[in-house]
Amino acid sequence: MGKIHYFQRYSSIENTVTNNTLQLISLIYQNSPTKASQLLTDLTGQSIDIGLDIVQQQREGHSVPDATIMQRSFKVLLEAKVDSPVCTEQLLRHAKGFKNEEIQILLLLTKTALTQEQSNQIKEEIKQDHPSVVFQHITYEDICNICSELFQSHEYKINDLIRDYQEYCNDSGLFDQARHTMRVVPCGTSVLLNLKYEMYFQPSDRGYSNHRYLGIYKDKRVQAIWEIDHIIDVEVTDGKVKTVFVSGEPTDKYDEKILNMISEAKNECGYDIHTGHRFFCGNSYSTNFIKESSGGIMNARLFNLKEYSNDWDNPASLAMALKDQSWKE
Image 1: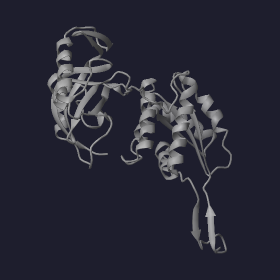
Image 2: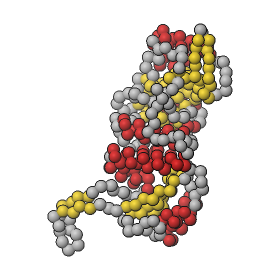
Image 3: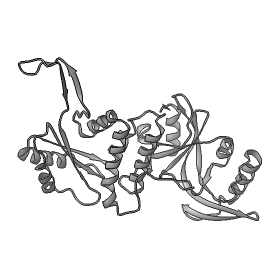
Image 4: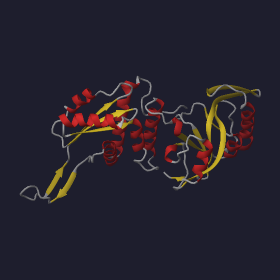
């Protein structure tokens, strides 16, 4: 069965990106107003409290009432860009939309970061005409990175939502994380075959986000990684391999390995993978990237390799660097 997505992908990206981003924020708010408050604070750089403040016997002017119930007023105006250029005049017009809110934030969302000079120029022009308005610029990748840190690993549903938004952004070209992304996949009884043949297999219709590296996980550690050079859909009939190349130039160099792996997967693991399966191939490098937190992983995990090594562009150096590191959820 194909993966069910929470965020729409099939309409024009210009029509869906703002809606999907707002839906993400709304879903986080429904799950936890406190986490939504943290998200907005991290995105805007301003302290934003969502919800009521209730205090007893706090002095208000010349008296002390028995209780005070209050809520700070704030307003965030969002301008989301995909491919169209940033227009300062448009942002200045948006800044006129604020009234008497205590906190007024104009948030610009783009695919790539503005230069410091661009950002400073916009800030100065807005400050000159609208001194109470705070201008802040973020990227889609910023949203993904901040959201990925909000919830605990056992909060599966909301984390699935966030991962789907990350995949939506990546697959829609809102940022290209694939070059420095590793997908770590949990391998059970097949792990020795995965390591032996330097291949990972999964059903062809199982969804996944674009990624450059694959990590083989078992026993609370990533045991090997490789840079994916071919992704191949395979059908075997009467001992003959029929291949469809999802990525990589067509070649027969993997045919023998695929046939052997299919045979051993059946005999040693009880897996029938001769049809309807996709193979991720490359040259593996041993590593020892340890999961520090308790428990295993049930599903694949995506890692931003920039957070773990400056040598993420070199598979051999990356594998060595990961041996000295650990990760947790």
